[in-house]
Length: 280
Image 1: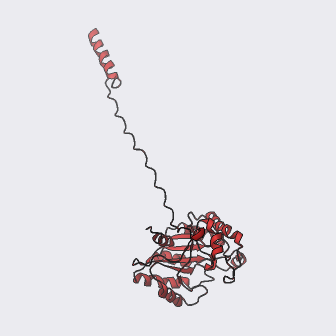
Image 2: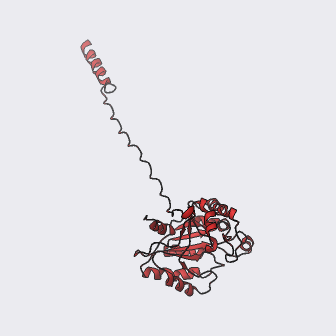
Image 3: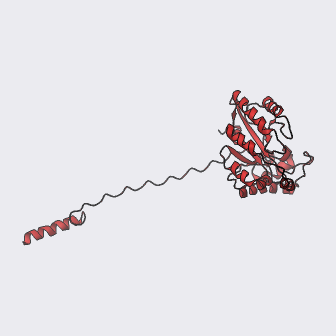
């Protein structure tokens, strides 16, 4: 009986190299490949500073056969209009935003910080909708030059702070990624204003087509003015305020299908700036 026992001990000793008494070792799990870093998000395109470091100004995209057009909407509300809003005046236009969504039209909304404070839910919904981009229209909607449509004037030493205060209002409202584009209230600017806001790192965005929707009562006239003025690369200025531009939604519903019939493609301002800067 001794020999069989010795043989069993030898077998178990040999098997220990594999596992306990004859059990084969489990294969090693393959080492996972190292995780690849996520690509850094691309920054929105901007223009290089102008002469002397002045804030660059953009008015339209390239006049190419690629028929692109940007519809832009100013969501205006001045710092002093809170009482009017409390009394029931509407500075928003949710029907216009709904029409743009229904028509699947990308657009850039130039929003004042005061507007974002008054309508934070709408500001957040616009800012989080990939169809739109939010850009800066100042906090106060006060003018950056003298004699600008009767608007109160921002002192030169407060101009940059007014721009930055608007971005802070957007963040508080939940707008995740406001663009580095700034539209002067009334479009009014001069070298002094361009120098004053240069530290904010923005591209000033003007336009080459005035819709005429401000205080208009004839939507067809607004539509005709836009359709007569649009060229490839155009930036159209319109408004997103019911009290000051009550016909804009109806005008947009006429403008969009006609421009599409003419072969135009709607884009955000960022795409036009990227094309102008040689990036697509």
